[in-house]
Amino acid sequence: LRDEVNRNLELARAEKALGASLEAKVLLHCADPAVSEALARWSGASNGVDELRFLFLTSQVELVASATEVTERSLFSSTREEGPAATVGIAAADGTKCERCWHFDPQEQSQTYEGVCPRCETSLSLMGVAPRQRRAAAAAGYFGE
Image 1 (cartoon, rainbow, N blue to C red):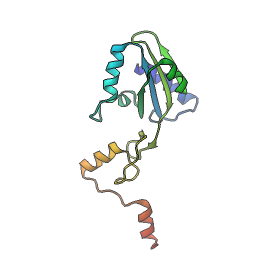
Image 2: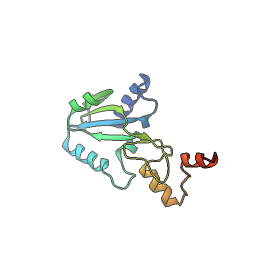
Image 3: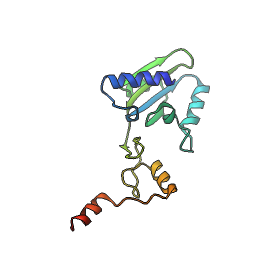
Image 4: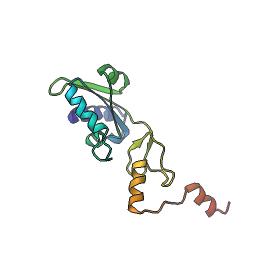
């Protein structure tokens, strides 16, 4: 599956639809119920590490109900017949780019650490990194406003 995702990512890059793989969301439908179940377990990993998006080196992966849905929602898509049959599509990632990890995240960015996603906020907090001063507040203080 990863090879199929990479082929579609390269098509998107060649057509200038995406610059980097982290700008992408993978849409994936697998006809085999056993493979779909395994992918769903990876998709819902709660440890913040074992996620499909890290396997595919993209910001997001969405498992969808049908091959037709993949095709309709994708910029580029293909169907793989050998091995586990699957339809893979590439769309633009949702959300805002994190300044630390460069992943796009649809969740609201951190209020404590400006410009970072919730995952990076947790990491920075666990490492004991002090939050930067808010840019607007820092500029206002610097210019005496």
